[in-house]
Length: 549
Image (cartoon, rainbow, N blue to C red; front, top):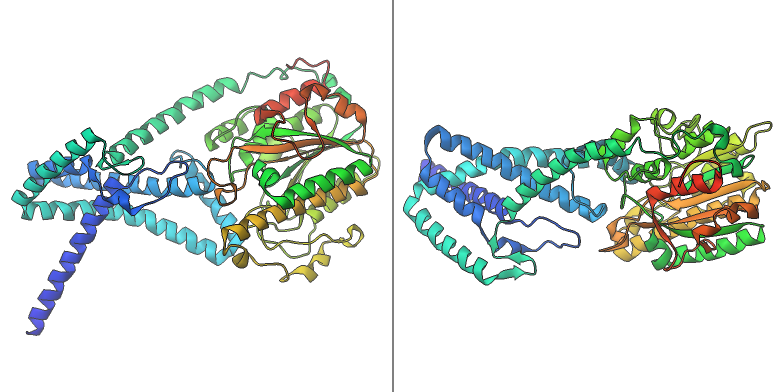
């Protein structure tokens, strides 16, 4: 065999391989099922007959010229885009327990990159973004090329393609009539791509309609016209701290022995220090992440369940809890240790007079996983910067505790509060805790690390409260959302625990009609409220002359 023959043979083999890959890509794009909550991928889904494929073969046999070429391009782009949607749906369901929203979720790319950088390092983050970008480009470009290659195969074997198409059409009708499936919920007679396309169009239309629905809800506020002197009169003179504990969800309270032990021991320690507490459940609008939806829901009294709603809300002057406290005479601050850039919405929308972040909290120690500083330092800095100041007005603060953010490792240890200073005391712990790559070797290791990190956050808060001598301090502590599905498991609720803690018994007397349970650990029968109900009920309880309901 001559060199020319060898090159020709290699080209034919290569051409056949490319054709096989093209047909396989088109086939996968046509038969891959749309992910749903609790789904699991299976190769059996590929052993199906796509009705869209049969229509595609008929179109290729019937059409020619420019119309055929444009059809191949458009169908290829559509199939590539729908395959991308399936990939993104699977990723979102695995973490946030909801499908991908093509209208708004692309805006989370920056946040996802920052999260990966904080959790796994900047190099990994850049590689992940590059890989995602390549996947998008590859599928959008490869889709039309694959359809065109498949069309060329049909042209070369028109009679065989027609006979095969007719046989598969008959098989599709038979399987559809008999309800034959390769797995539960995965029928042999497939129309999943058409169904997904219809669903995505409907989802976009529903989101566009929701914009108008939410725009009508925002101005409806029973407290909008309440005079400042009538707001929060029952809390005058008291410092009020709203503490969000990252990923502090119902699964932690009910399934993690570390969290349960921290709550029980913490409740006892607080009782010994003169505190009382009441607890219940709130249903969060988000799951596994995107915590700003929970923060805005609690603060605004509106159900902020999407990025679209969040963006709409930020452009308004809706009365937030922080703004209500500010109008009533409190100094309002936010402590956001994970932020490293300006956050104008903190002042413009939420009404915080001061926003402390990673740049202004004065931390000089090492980071721990996602958290740039331990929660214990965050609370110490808040005390130093605000509560310990003399001749000040009462403070209302929202404080974020983020040590319990994924990846839940490495984990800091509590130190003597007197030694914290600028946080350099934590340098001695650097490199000694269990690293994230060890934790993430098994699901059980991840779940244990999650429980330990939430317990650390709760222990930090309880230790902080025990050390303060402020008898007029009121603390509301709650989770923002459940942890990701790797911890929560399938079919988990959106519930998070919430507690009100105070030394002054009149504070809890104000909420006795809520029927919340004593202690820090709500039981399975504790009240469950949608998170957007909290604002109005809180303002009503502590603003007896206001017009809320």
